[in-house]
Length: 425
Image (cartoon, rainbow, N blue to C red; front, side, top):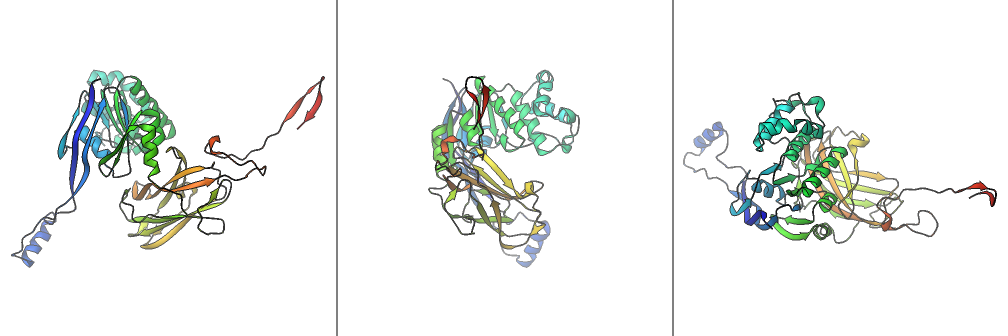
C-alpha cells in the first residue's frame, strides 16, 4: 500500500529564554554607559521538542497520537503540516493536506464568519466554486448560521473552533491533521466531530488525530503512537498502546501524591498544584476508597503571584481514558475573590461516591475566566475504588457492571389473572 506520511529521524530544536541583547533601546544605552567595555553575549538555551522520530502511515490509515502535555505531539503535527521545519531529519506528506491545529488559525477578526470561510478555505487550497458549493453544509455543521455574517471578533473560542473544524472537515483533502479538536465545544459538537472523522476514515482519507480523549482515540484509530519527551515510546495497536500509556501514571494507588516535581504540565505558573490527598470521613489520609462512601480530596497548591477569581477543576477518567465526571468550583459557584502568594489547600467533599470498583485517573486544573491557565495536570494521580456491600445483601458490586453505581430499588407487581389469583411483591 502507498505511503501517505513518512517521518525519518525527525528532530526539532527550539531556542528558549530571553537573549540579553533583546531588550529596550533605553536599557541597552544605559548598560553601555555603565559598562562601556563589556561585551553583551546572548544567553543560549535550547530544548528538543522532537528527537529522532520515525514512522510511516499508509494511505487511508487513521492513527492516534497520545502523550502528556509538552510531549511533542503538537510540534510533530506542525512539522508535518509545514508550519515549522525540522532541525534534522525529514518529513514527507503526499497529497492535499488539511490541518486544524489551533483555534481560529487562518481567521481574520474583522471579517465575518462567511468571509472567513472563504479566507480559510482558500488558505487550505479550496477553490472559490468549491467553497460556494459547500458553504451551507459548513455553516450547518458549525452551528453558527445565526452569526455567520457577524465579525469574527464577536465569536467565542468555541464558535471559532467549530467553524474551523467545519471548513477542514469539508475540504477534500488526502491527509487531515487534527490537534485536540475535542478539547473545546459542547457534547453535541464533539459528537459531530467524531462522526465526521469516522466518515473520513471510511472514505479512505489519512488522518492523524492528537487527543487526550483515550476513548475517542481507541474508537477511531486502529493504531496509535505514544510520544514522551519528544521520542516515540511505543507504536502499535491503539488499545495496547493506550493501556501501557495509562499504566505509567501510577503503579499503585496511594493516599497522596507529590505533584510539585511533575514537569509535564501547562499554564503560566502563577499558581501550581503541589500535592493531592485522599481523605476518609474522619479527615485521615486513606488509600482505601469504597463505593457508596464519603470521600474528601485535598488539593495543595502554591501561589507565586496574586491570582484573581480562580476556578479549580477536578476530572475523573476511567482506566480506558473516558471522562467520567468533572467537578469544578465554577459549576458549584464557589467564589474565591483572589489568591495571594503562599501555600494553601482546597477540599473537595464527595458525600456519596457512586463509582463501581475499578481504577480511576485524576486530572486537575487551576484557571480563571478568559482562558487564563495557571496550572493544568493531566492524569496526575490515580485511585482505586473497592467493592462495598451497598445494598446490605452480602452481594458486593462488580466493576464489570459498568462505571457508575446508581442507587436504586425494585418493586414487582403481579397482574390479576383468574388462573393464579393476584398478588404483589
